[in-house]
Length: 451
Image 1 (cartoon, rainbow, N blue to C red):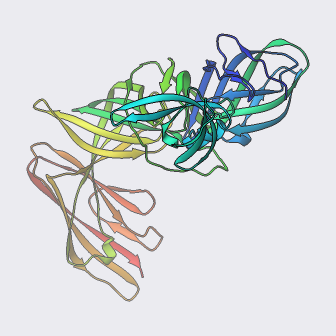
Image 2: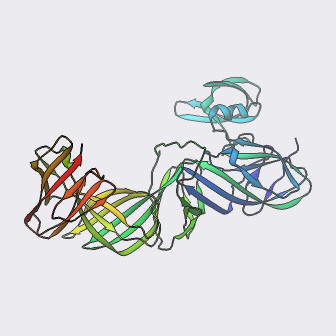
């Protein structure tokens, strides 16, 4: 096999199995796109010099989670690729011993209880914990494998995940090498902080990136694609072995809608260490108008028996935002006497811009709703019930409450009441009631429906 002679320009580290050493890779024009589907698309570019005597190229430091079938490499036309391999040798004592058979090594020998000496010898063989070596004076002795010292890693051991191409090169030249490939075990999620104050709010969005792809991305251009792409690849969910949080902020993340997805580009280069979390601020909007909502979902009046108490859910509704939001978790906070209080947590889906967002906070302590049978007059063909609704407001402010009552909406059904209502979400009757501070409001509704 001809010896491969690869000379790297300032930004390359390529070698072959016959090379004396592996140089440190320096990548230029690198970028990374992370998808919701726990996959990432890596792009890298390196420069190299090759000659017709070179028979292979080893591209070091690809991600351990690389999808080999997705590799797309671009080289000049007169460099022909015949085959491709993915190689990665985890460095172990056994592999080091095997690679050094019949080679000079050093052995740490115990001289006395507290003192060692180092001797030079040739490694003949090994078997687990013990090895046979031949000293410079031709003595064959048994030593512990753990006492053998190695000065370098043998060239046949590829200790970084690498792609190896067997190539045919027609002429000596300088070339640009571009590489694209998919990786797994890298993902992002969105988290939002909503700070509310009376009827106004500020919303901040953070992207949290989990990288356990087996590769460190150094000062790379980072983009995120929000949306659920179709993929044939399985999604694996594993816990991070080591977690570190790095907060990086920017007010100017570029956002672009594309083919039904939303594409976010971070305007500065990002370093993503392997097995770590990195957080980046990607969104901020201030002075968002909010509407406070109070809702109680009640029983179907045709099947209500006796009296039933219902809790009231309080929510805030944000008017449409200027940017689309990736799906994520929104945590809502407010201040009281200088103390920050968590009011609630919500998950939101992929949300287009200018679409209102409703966030549930929890159960309201001061609003109580009761529903009870006021009168029942069923016949053989119809259900007929008069239901009394009672809303108690124990707070010092007037509240507007929405009661949602499931009821069959058809030609044979009827609703009779002095209270106005609308149908919401299909078969939900919605009553909007204003209750003054520290008062109770009651009204009665007659429901009739064919059995």
